[in-house]
Length: 175
Image (cartoon, rainbow, N blue to C red; front, side, top):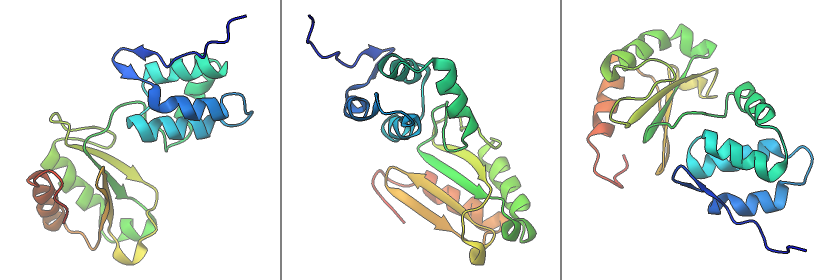
C-alpha cells in the first residue's frame, strides 16, 4: 500500500504548495468548494486553468462543475488582475451622483473597460453593484497587496488625479 502523500504539482509554472493545507483540510468535506476556491484566489490572485485542474484532481470534483461555480459567483476571477483592482460602485446612490461619468473618465484615462486590465498590468477595472459607502457617492475602492483604499465624492477630474498619483507611487508607499 502506498502511504506517500501526493505532493502539490507545479503546472505551467504555478506552485500549489500554498494551497495544499486548504485542500488537506477541505478536499473531502462536502460543500467546501467555495471555501477552496476563495483560498486559491486569495493565494494566486485568480483561478487559473491549472489551479482548477489541480483542485479537481485533489477533490474529485469535475472541472466543469468547478468552472460552473467559479463563473456563477462574481467574487471569482478567471484572469489575473492588475496590481491595483479598481472597484467602481454602480449602486443607486453612486449612479444618481454621476458614477457613469466617473467610470467614463477612468476608462478614457486607463484605456480599458469594465473587466479589463491595462497593458502594463497596473490597473484592472471592475464595476460592482454596491460598496456600501452611499454617503460618499460616487465612490470607488482600490485593492492592492497593501490593502484597500476607498475614494468618495469623485468627479471626472478627481478620479484621474487619484489614478495618476497611484500610478506614480513608489513600491510600498501608501497614501
